Length: 193
Image (cartoon, rainbow, N blue to C red):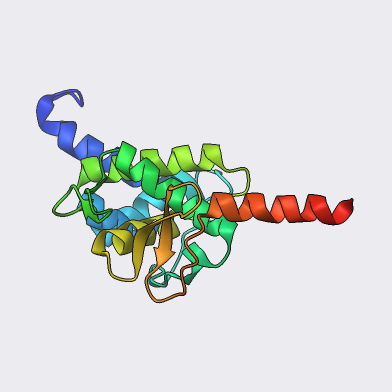
């Protein structure tokens, strides 16, 4: 038997995804949801390929995944980064937005391909932001929350018309994070002169 035989392809993809998600410091449950691997197998992968191999900088997160939405809208920078992630999820065919700006998941449940697409979107997000405010687990939480259209939704800016992530239970001034950041920059420049 060779590793390249077709019957090992599925297991190899599970293994690759688990390592990729461990590299992003995903929690065990998140990895298990996408890969189907047992908690024990995931912990052994971390020990073998990260902890015991001398690879530094990758930590195992313990406890439950974050579930609050306040972090996504606490300031315009975080709101912009959350909006960027939603756009990347849409581009990666993880989410879709209908004509009423309602967000829908394209996957009935997480699987290996879904996990790779989420990782790809997160990796692009990291390249776009010099100081990322959202860890992989926060990005995972954003994906779930925005797809439920419950606490988070996509609003439209009254100035430029761009969609942005907004808290359903907070006052919405209908100003997207880009316009808010630009307004603060202009005010700062005005105050200097």
